[in-house]
Image (cartoon, rainbow, N blue to C red; front, top):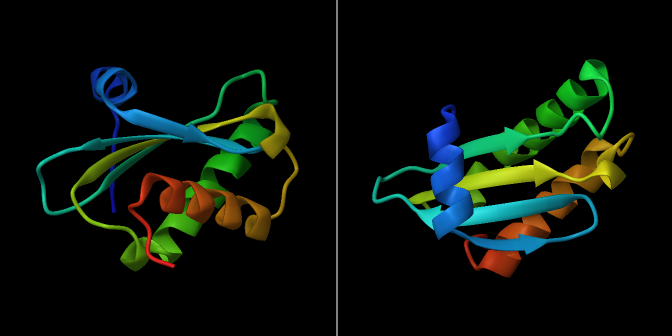
Length: 109
């Protein structure tokens, strides 16, 4: 699993990608021309302190890691957490992530 790290990479996905949202997450998706997906996770300070933000980041990263084979390859994904994600369980985050993947049409059932 590769990450989007640079601000420039995120900005590209935000500007040129397509976005869908649900209660907990917003997902931007853009083709990257590689044989693999790159994922970037962003949690704003509005959501909570660093402990809360890192927990959400870990939950999203782990739900992507365990479901990676369900996602079509060749995309950059930027996942932005919403304030409602605060205090949610792993299963709620996982289902939110998979739901967005299906909305984008890049996630198999």
